[in-house]
Image 1 (tube, rainbow, N blue to C red):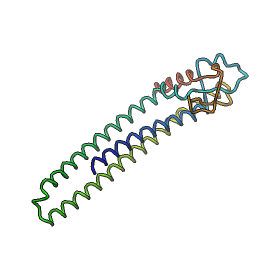
Image 2: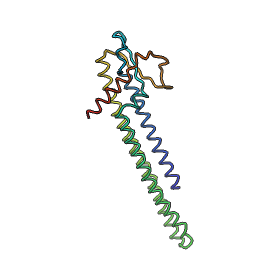
Image 3: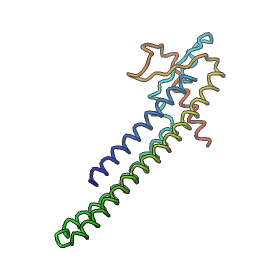
Image 4: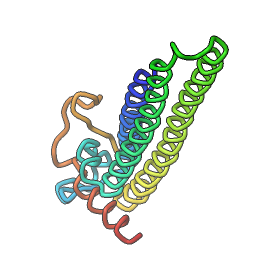
Length: 199
């Protein structure tokens, strides 16, 4: 039962990380819809008020997002290692009980089984709480990420006179075609990274 608990935690931690990254990606996408920049903005004429940002590139090149990803990968690994250690300790206890069960009285077996059942329940509760805490922390960080990108894009769009900033993501976008001269991704990434490096 403990092995299942550990495997469940590993899957939960992995799913949590994927959810966080996906949420970050969605937030970056929303943010980029709010505002955009790129080194090719010189190709955009003053009368064009709509630009777009490639959210895939934004995520892979934005230093804050990369740092956030590394941070949560580390936390996930630590949580998995912690859960694995606790799971292995519990498995050892179960194995010890199984080896000595035949030499124990009925009362001793009953009390040991009850104790092990309680311990297993505590382990499952610990796993759920740890996973929930990690998810909550990721959600908080995702909000910060979204706010950073949204705030930057808001000011950038105002400065450049853009009325709309769309987001493009391969295989997940309503934009089927857009002239590359409207792509302001590089400039947005450059600006975001410059802003992040100041902190």
